Image (tube, rainbow, N blue to C red; front, side, top):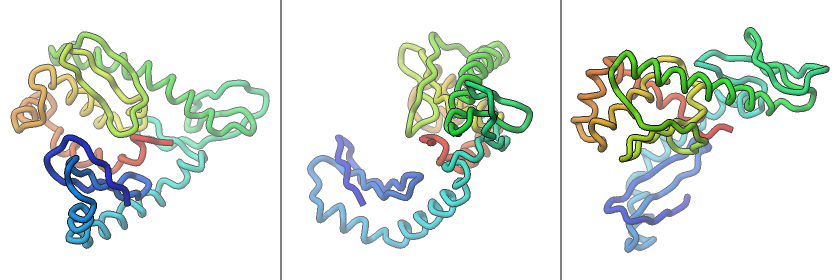
Length: 213
């Protein structure tokens, strides 16, 4: 259990995909008060931790670099002789002998190209706009929209099903209309992407992949 202080006004409990419990607290709050809050929430912490552990177990083959997700589909990682770089094939990713992690480089290359094409397709269809696109490696978010209209997307989005990829892209584009996460944003998002309420719930099932590997 770790306490992280910042210029926030409220206490928050976060359990990361690996099961670490993080208590986010205001700067001036004592350890005693933070831990007392955690004790009051013990039941919730235990049930949430059990859920996180079960998800981690389900993703064990991905962490062991035996499999990888591409647009929601499971691809096996196969070590292959006489190749120097990883390549995505039909249903599997071929990697050099002894280098299963090389599969991620191939997935990332494909993901960066796919996301750039897809966001432009969505803009043409919806009329939404952005000023600049960056593909980044985030550990705690799928995307980000800045005040200047630039959008950053996590390359790991390519591991999600197409519906969730679109959801994140629409979400960030809708921030061009309304920046904060008030009800107004969700209303705008639902107008442009009617499946947003379902996707907002479903994307939580892929939280382990946001900071994978």
